[in-house]
Image (cartoon, rainbow, N blue to C red; front, side, top):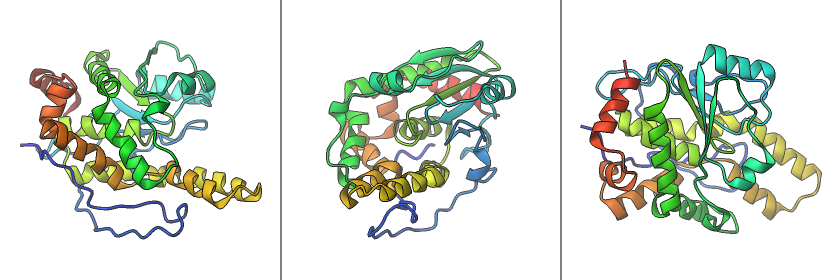
Length: 282
């Protein structure tokens, strides 16, 4: 039986990008088939791109490689990157969770044979300002409480179900950490991955984004940007396990448990969930 509660066993802002934040953490007991770092797909113009293949479920099964790929925005992919995704990873669906304004300013490239699905998860009205850890936690709650967000995740699961056989689904938002991170957590739960591994994969975005974020902060300091604005960017550029915990706390508050949320809130039936496990596990 799947664990219906995922707890924030660790709270880990990247040490190199957040100042004056007291963090306490426990070591997670996680036994993935391969290290989190080994899930990364190295692309010239992409970042935080990862193959979910290789994670082990609590039942001892494995997520199939080259079938589910999470990512950040794709607007800087090179021709070689596109060839890699289409030829080597068999991407056939590009599922975009970004807002309309994000899509307009950084459009995904057209990839041969790939169906593009534009499904915004929210709007700017879902954000809380100024950007602080507490406001980010409140924002994560909207991924559960706002009907548009639930509909977007429903459509995401339908894309997972309807993906062409033998091909891969790539899904993404802007940085591949928040909207994509919650979607990945929900999908991994349906597939039967344990809660500790789900959290470890979620917070790993800090590692995959660290160099990019550090460079951005360095540019801001060089340009004399105020400390308050830099701190907001630092918070917004990383993830913390308590953010994901806030989303799951909202799930438990509104729906009682994860399985009920997925079935009733996202309208993904038990039969559809079983079909997902059948298609994506070996």
